[in-house]
Length: 253
Image 1: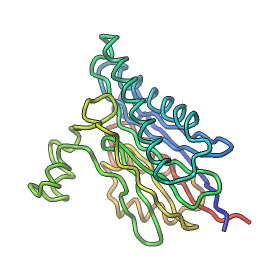
Image 2: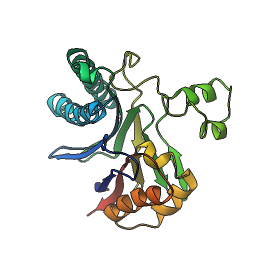
Image 3: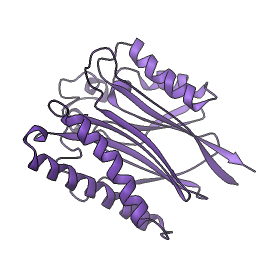
């Protein structure tokens, strides 16, 4: 069974922000497809700079190092190293320019190698990747927020975390010293019909998981789905930039 990806993407300024600090991209190379979503933070235009650099550096590094690599572990290592390189460059830029001093960005990415039956997914910060398979939705990434850390420490419940005052306070992101050896990279075995959503918290912060599931499973066109999700969040009262990438796994002859 040969697989292929159908992809749609959307990014909206929203009704409350002067700048769009989100950045999204879908890089299609002959041997690989990379989908990225980043949500920048920092004063003035610093967030825009950080998110834009993230989606430029990571594909550059992946393209440079991944050719010829076949094993899952080596591929995961290269993905982590690409993220670490982006972190180093963003920290260096912030150190050199006072206007960029506090900049940082979340990032989530999905990497598919042509001919492969797996998808590599990872992220930093509170942007998310979801898998919709059949009638279920699963969050594949972990939020690196203080609220989520409190959930993991069993101090608050997952339900309480949705409205907690520290839900948007991140302790790990690109541009921080907490990245360590890089985030966990998951390997997801693909099935025809799988759908993956990569999004910023401008979407996931206002649209509940069950609403995401109901919306995504009924859509047939991934560009319509991406546009629709962003507008759904806008109508639900999102006060942030709203961005997403939708991926559908299809069987080819």
